[in-house]
Figure 1 (spheres, rainbow, N blue to C red):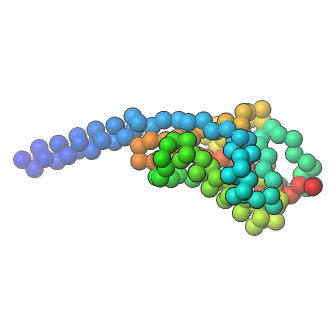
Figure 2 (figure 1 turned 120 degrees about the horizontal axis):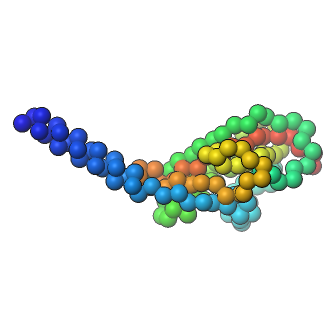
Figure 3 (figure 1 turned 180 degrees about the vertical axis):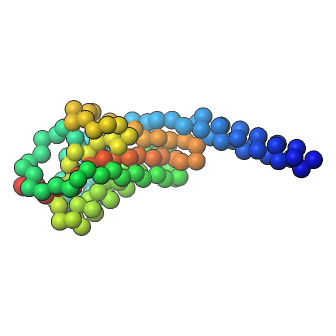
Length: 147
């Protein structure tokens, strides 16, 4: 009897995991559009400049090795709102890291889920669904640029 209950429980758990996984969706977010929005400009300020991979950057005086950062959230009303909330958190972390390291820019920003490509679009993947409402991974460098 115990064995039967255990098997039923395991089947229910596996079915639940599969159902949650089946709801996963990928939304594409335009980084440049987000950075140019009033909400992002107000929240991020103008002390640190943001340059996407492939964009023209003023002369770089010093830069860090590439790194990636990922943020997830379990709150939000729509996929788009959740993705924008996560993206703003990531840009805030990038800004704070640049300030901490004495930099004034974040450069070569791109999708951390895809290989680095300077000609890549400004679209990044935001994964939604299951137990995670939204997850975004970005790749970037902090830099000191001539202004």
